[in-house]
Image (tube, rainbow, N blue to C red):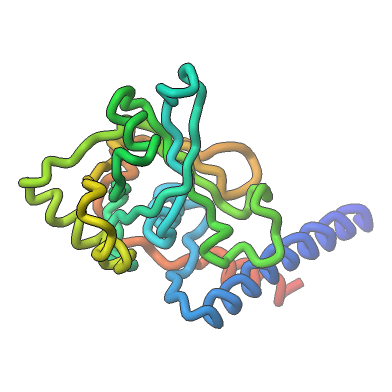
Length: 224
């Protein structure tokens, strides 16, 4: 019986550390002026994936380098999937072919895009590689968006809303709008390995629910 109680105390202590780290992260994000939506319950993989894309404004876009003999080439890029806190899940990019990422993607569309919870500010003191500091990789095809389409108009609006500086970027650099057509989703947001998410689940319109996970765990602590 004593051994079971000791295990319970250790589990409670570990959870308390995780919760404290997350709480510190929310406070720090608030101090920096970021309006961050509450992180979803780790059990809700789809909501967590959509939250990561909605709350971030940059990530690492990886392409197949045509200039390095087919080696993978990762590059930090700005993106948007919708107006702040109103994401649609599909990342849009504003890139010029003066950048190798755009050139690579045009020649070979196979690409992946990675975002982390860490820049959002909600990981607290946790290392970015800690499984509870969520990370997401979307894999698919890098596509040019038809400039005359309604989608291009939408993409430009949401890109400029999150990145106002883009409006003043040199016209002569021929910036174009691209997107990632998602084919696979890799999410780590807790212990136990990647969460299974289909593209259909990820793209299905939904209202992301605020997490009750931490509150329920705190309530359980109060009765111990």
